[in-house]
Image (tube, rainbow, N blue to C red; front, top):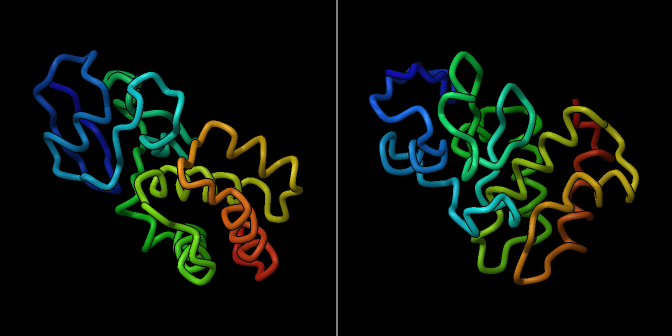
Length: 154
């Protein structure tokens, strides 16, 4: 039995400790906002926060999350920075197909919580592990800058 704190709620999970966090979130807890993309931590669609740090849940075993705080896209509306990021995403029409956007938002939120006014290089570095097949990178950067310019970060 593994005890996980997900979005502020405790969940006792009766799965093998090497079960990927992604499948635990989606298939056993019902939080389907976190997406499966590649299964190899290369695309970023499965990004969640583990104690505030963006991680790839497709390769993170639940044993690594035990005793830590897991935050998913479902909790971003209640997070000051996460909510501001979501609003900027909507205002600037960032999503096209939308599949990668949960991971993009999670990475952007983590960046803005540590760097209130990120440079283009800091944005590129923080977002480099998130792939958008629709190519909305320019709008993603603009949305991050909009949040920073409004002072909603940190």
